[in-house]
Length: 130
Image (tube, rainbow, N blue to C red):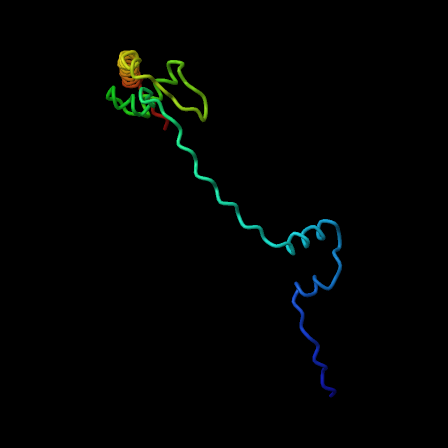
């Protein structure tokens, strides 16, 4: 028996480095891998927005009128005061009385509708599907 010659063992990365790129996509990927990595830029701190002391947000108004903020925003959308996606509600302190009266009226209407639904559900006869 003849002894085997010891051949060097190459990894797939070493073989890829020796062979030319097969296509443009591979050449681009190699160029990108060989390029030095850029450090991510540090984000500049956001500037504080100047807020008007008489301006209130929806949660602040909800707290003032004694309502849940989520329920109050639901009221605003239901009454056509929705502001769209990504925007913020803003109110003036001088306008605080109007949302309070409208919200209490809307809340009573919602309670009446809820009671009517419950009454209709109770009156509906159940059918047994056996």
